[in-house]
Length: 83
Image 1: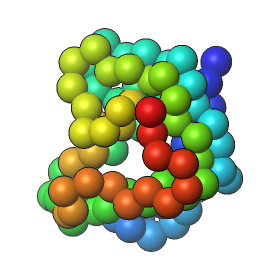
Image 2: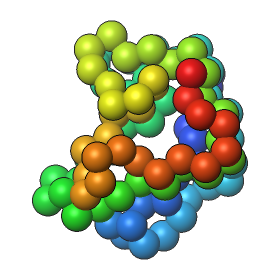
Image 3: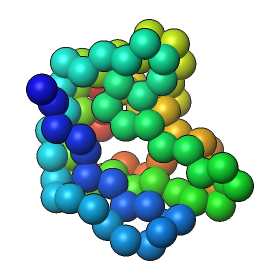
Image 4: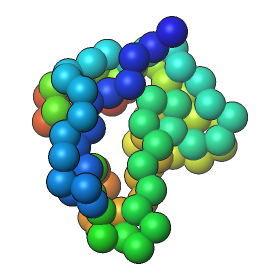
């Protein structure tokens, strides 16, 4: 089972977890590794030093393995890029 990536949500302002790896996770819809939705579009997502590989989304995604809907067009990612 794959681990969830470390994410910081500015909607709540509190980080959760530590850098993680996610691989070979699949979803029927969006976000094989990360699914983030800010209903009022004021939240943002920051992913730091996490490895996201081979996490296909069968339906929709913003980036490979990530579905994001927030204040910016895409989440902020530092470290390895999703693949």
